[in-house]
Length: 131
Image 1 (tube, rainbow, N blue to C red):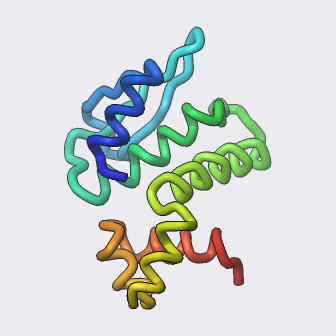
Image 2 (tube, helix red, strand yellow; image 1 turned 45 degrees about the vertical axis):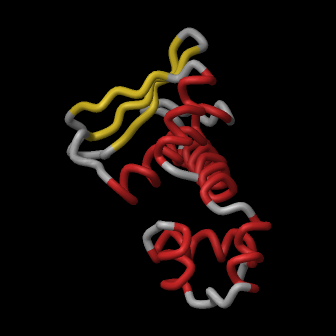
């Protein structure tokens, strides 16, 4: 999935994306009156922009929201759900298997193949295969 694919999906779903200054968090999502507004730091580009937007889309698509005063368990559950959505949409299980069968077997090769950071690719592999 590309940044354009994600932006198009956000538009179809009625989510607004605003690029602004968010130096601390780099991205965030606000849910108000049935609408998601995704804030993205204007300095984000390339892989970082893709990964942040996919994560925030996960919050929107799964209604995985919490407030500043939410307990740690609620926060962890919401972040897990947003990450799960991100992993499944950036790299489907079928696409991952296909890439491995084509010879992309290291975390770094897979990260390059899917245009992701190696750290994110490692998390995706852990998500699908555990351990």
